[in-house]
Picture (cartoon, rainbow, N blue to C red):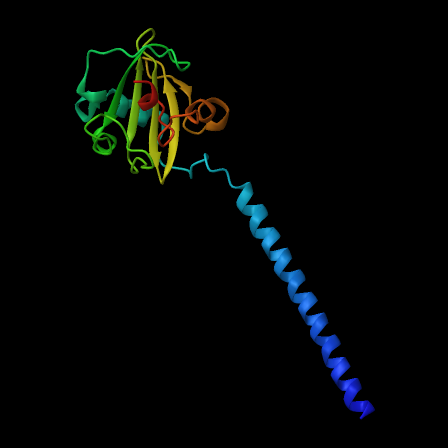
Length: 178
């Protein structure tokens, strides 16, 4: 009888050790997954084969762009951002995501391939966002095509803070103001 009790106790101790080991492995795995997941930057897109110049050329190709609300005359004040007065244009992919009222519906996102362009009126600067693999590539170019802000730069320092303000829709803020 005594041997039987020792076997049961040994089995229970062995099960406790296994459970503790399994718990430690599970906690460690959860920590690793959480740590690496939280380290991921949701604003940094995967590398693309596009260049600043290619996107600048797309921004200048007026035959493939439509003005915001099909209005090529209105100049938006730009009082709510750093660019100044501007005209706003969308490529056809982005324009198709807008409602009849010219807005992206709340909760929707622009599809990949969307291009949004601000033509800054004071100096000809083009500020643009291009959707690539569910991320925005952000860029700015002077009227002569020289790069001011490269699509390879970190957008969290210059773009995302402003574009994350109240009223944004897929990081586009113009719908909130105009």
